[in-house]
Length: 244
Length: 311
Ligand SMILES: Nc1ncnc2c1ncn2[C@@H]1O[C@H](COP(=O)(O)OP(=O)(O)OP(=O)(O)O)[C@@H](O)[C@H]1O
Ligand SMILES: [Mg+2]
View 1 (cartoon, rainbow over the protein chains, first blue to last red):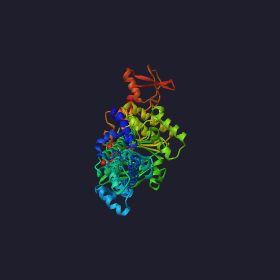
View 2 (view 1 turned 60 degrees about the vertical axis):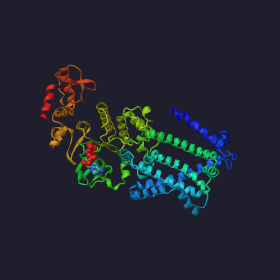
View 3 (view 1 turned 90 degrees about the vertical axis):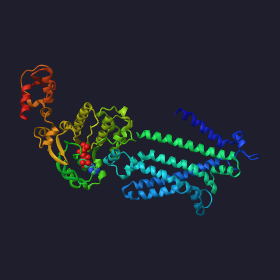
View 4 (view 1 turned 30 degrees about the horizontal axis):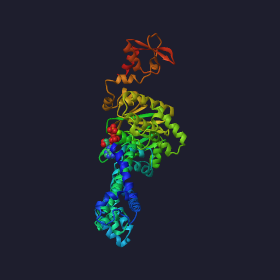
């Protein structure tokens, strides 16, 4: 708790500095760059790469959330129960397919750029959100669900007013996992010319420039840690509100 | 009037409810009592169609319940569930307001109603309105559950062990509150309990269930004086039978002229109260008052004779 209070602002400041004022770190990274090579990545602005990286993650997670939650709602209704095993299998397959393979397969269809990366992130995001949503929707407190029927809520009202709000904290856990997976996976998107922070890392790897690799890695890592932490805080807050 | 007509519910090969037929008058309290697993909850839940009967039907004021959409039927019927079932993500006020909100009441009317109900159940509105269920004690949660069932002033109220989690003192108070509220509103109540004491205290009629069947449906005094089966006799408990009976008879019935000393009792107190007063203070008679004026006495002798009548 206390550690978090101090650590969190420090990490935020570090991240902001790395993205907005990379030149401040020249003395630290200089020993890692090969002689004569630049220490700080300057081919494009780290800020715009970060924004594009986060944008891809947000768009893919948003789409995955809509699809996974809708699917979870469908398979937890009496009418859709028969599809539960099948949809589980499909979501699992999406997860086992290696990201690089998804990118490679998507390029011929969608061309180079953000398209294939979005598809890969979307597919990887589905499973955790779907699994968590199904679990949340099938383990709601029975007495509460009974009361919801008992006071005369119809199916829609039960879903919107009781089931989804109560399931939300657990769904959010799934979304958090997806976001973190996506933040990492998006880096390899730059192999097919998506603008992400992976560009910095790959440039470093191609030119043996450890300084670049470290910069890219640190920024992606800090984003992941801070976003993960923020979502945990949100979950705890919501869970406390719903009396868990 | 609620008519339950040959109602049966079969799960696999258990007859949870077996051909139950009974009638509850408008404005009366019917208490369904029986041991665990005797089918009380199932019977209650078939009335608001949370369970569909295997056969038989329920009529409310002559109208069969199966013609209406279930969720619309349920909005007319208050339901306090076994184990409260409050919405954990809504405040106490929002929980109580659930049905009025569905029915589209005005904001101010809802707020007044919520405060009125909280006060009725001895919960300070300002202190409890904005709390979440997790911030209440078990007994408070249960009272909020009952308040939610009462909120829209439903003509019919179904209550499944509503006072189970209350300690004896609060429980007695909640029972009195319910009686008072019911008499004021004239609502019809069907209440489930496994406590015969509660059934006798609260019920205008008591329905005793055993293994899915209705074994006796009668006024409390009759249940005590003339149990229909050994099971009912066991439920009533032989030891306390005379005392239970006395607790149902008001002093008015045995009032006579004559002197008596010591503290007086009001005329609507029970013979049981008078008996305790006699035994406790070593008196052979207690004065009886009506609106504060002594109108006569009840003697120990008369109480004993009355008890003997039913032995
Ligand atoms: N959904 C169900 N499926 C199968 N059997 C059930 C179901 N609901 C109830 N039963 C059975 O029906 C019988 C009556 O159950 P019910 O819940 O009505 O009892 P009860 O009198 O309310 O008991 P308690 O006092 O424990 O609440 C029991 O034998 C129970 O096991
Ligand atoms: Mg029960």
